[in-house]
Image (cartoon, rainbow, N blue to C red; front, top):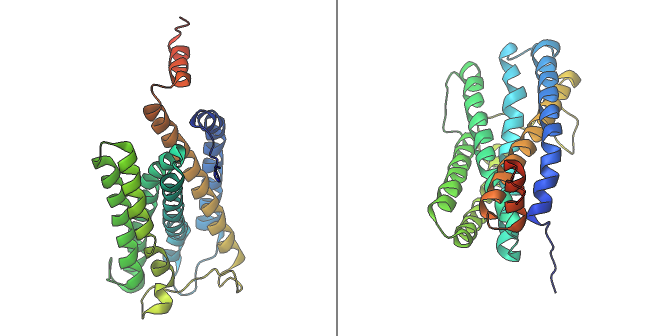
Length: 248
């Protein structure tokens, strides 16, 4: 008895193809709206001045870096445990996007840290654990690409992703567990926001923009991986013939 049934690659390919244009529209619209609110409507911070506005890029990127790693690890483990081919493909597709968001979080954090702390980088607990997250993403990508046999590569990647997931709570709770320069959370599920409503709106809109972007690029990358792995499948051959105009 099968306890888990995952969509066939052919169904995913078709569905993702229909969703991708709408996701790009949402990405562009939400990004423009979020940047406008954050950089032109939100008030100047009383303590940090206009330098704080980098948080409208930094914070959503940091959130995405952590959430995408958990999603990547989750799909990788599903592919490993249930032999769900598409799950492993999705995990591979997520990794570069997660690494990109991690790099953006570190890069924008440096621009925020210079006027705030007087240094581009400090070996702060949260910064260091976020840097480790980038190495975990890059390690996962390097590992799965270095093994020729796809099944072995997917299983090895799933193991690394699962072990690396322990770093996510370390990042999140680092400001509580250690004496750190990094400020605590300004948004909590159990307390009122510590920022003006306009600032909060900008941050949430930018977060939605990041999600739309992540879905768009992950779907595009997964479709490419599907075509590569399923190149011998009848539906892929038929699709290629359709695009080339070959009806024979």
